Amino acid sequence: MFHIVLFQPEIPPNTGNVIRLAANAGGTLHLVKPLGFELTRKAVRRAGLDYGELAAVRVHASLAACLAALADARLFSVETGGLRAYSEVRFRRGDALLFGPETRGLPAEVLAQVPRARQLTIPMRPDNRSLNLANAVALVLYEAWRQNHFAGARELPRPPFPGGHRARM
Image (cartoon, rainbow, N blue to C red; front, top):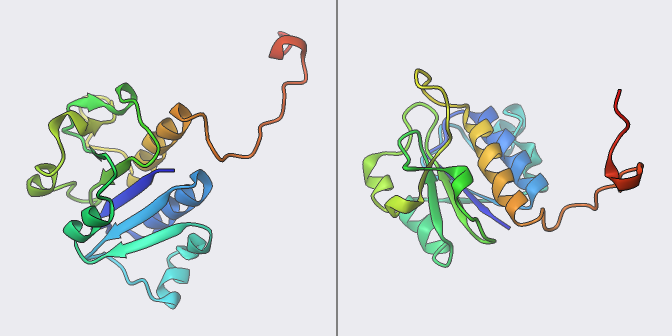
């Protein structure tokens, strides 16, 4: 459905949470080296990253290699300095969502590869730095999936009340 690109992720539990998000939303996770952790089987289990059996996870030696693999995708960056709120964009299947490392965000040379109109931000209060990486990915990924009618999700139960409204308490 969507591609999630983590550029040089540093914190294993954040990446583990994003693996789980990708699995549950039908996305493909792309990790761009260098990583701040090892992807050996033992290290992956210790870091809680073993959900990868349910998610498509690809590791790329560089951003150039990742972007070449995603040549047909529209690329969006999500960064505190983005020009548009993520909720203002009309996402479509196959879009790629690029997020930077937890401690420093996306470098200028990476952002220069994303058209300015596709440099997105998540609104927040003025004196705060940023959201946790996994939380940021969850917000944007689920908004993109919602816009595409949660394609591929299990069918939701029908409301038990006529008209779908619950009685007021």
